[in-house]
Image (cartoon, rainbow, N blue to C red; front, side, top):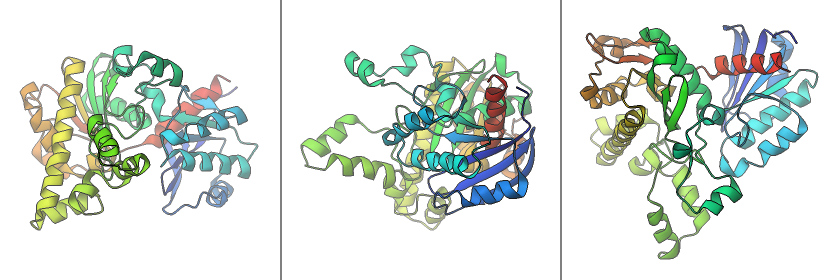
Length: 365
């Protein structure tokens, strides 16, 4: 069929709904519902006002789905079966999907999954060292997340710094309320910090990131903590929020730190240490670095975090232009004079990647 041009990108978060209508790469209209109740009403109103030729949906966990896929009932049921692997986001994405199918059943819908970007991970990177029968029985593996954001950030970061993505080693840092890094070589992801669920890896707003499994076992078996409560606490009361006593938003943590709060200072130190530790691991897997790119709310709006990560990688001759870093607003090349590595900040644009994948999926139908 002919490639459809006007695509409505639906990005349902844990509490918000972002709608963006794209004609090619041009943003025609957008709307955000901050406290979305899961109903079809705001999507229906948006479509009544602006129209669309197709709808692309961001879904966090795709399981065995490794590319953008046209929606049918079986796919919706399968994605629903993965809810316990991404309990904050999967139900909301499915609510958005069902809302569109209810409001405009005649429009084709396509699911674009965050995990697809990481589906080609080398077996050594994707496999957990747990009993083999567990991996085989339950399809345990490192799935990785934020794939739509990483895909756009890598391509745009290389463009901004004058590198060819197909020939580059790129460290993509999606830093927001949720955060992950992706090591990308020649356009393919070879490692990432999130794993079977979005709980692994970096310290995040309210998520602890990686924790010694022996510590969890000790809390449960030796201190009688309820397993469900332990994991709920790590997901919703850990990270920056748990350490600092603030909301967990980095802006609040930095404000408290600036006011002399010792807990906030420690929280920020732990946060940065995790970023630097994982960045070093990703670079080692890549065997070097050609481009360092930041995206996501923190990645886009917190120059001191960008500078801290870049400075930690100075042994690779990474240099950031201080003025460009401080003044960056939207997409920008931050590469300092004489830097061997390109450095960029890229506005998170999952909508562009959703629209691109949606058109490609429908063109192949």
